Image (tube, rainbow, N blue to C red; front, side):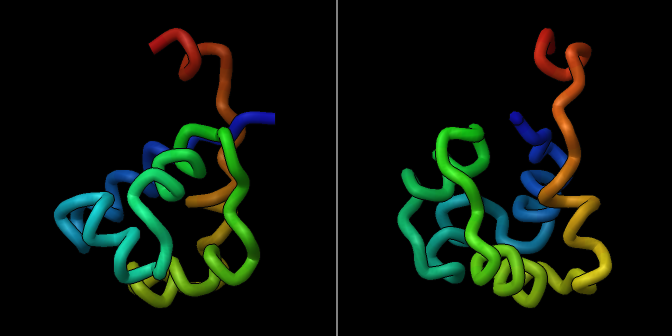
Length: 77
């Protein structure tokens, strides 16, 4: 199952400016973050929790940022 991380990407850009800056703060490489955002690898629970802390999100928002199913409309964009 693929997830739509567009909202997460937007928050990353808003808070950190670049995905590379966010990846460093998260403690993973730029390529590793890219693989997660492109549904090649999955985010671990620890990565999701730390991401929330870094991005100023409440834990109750995890599903809004990490579990948005990719619709067929999203896939065609």
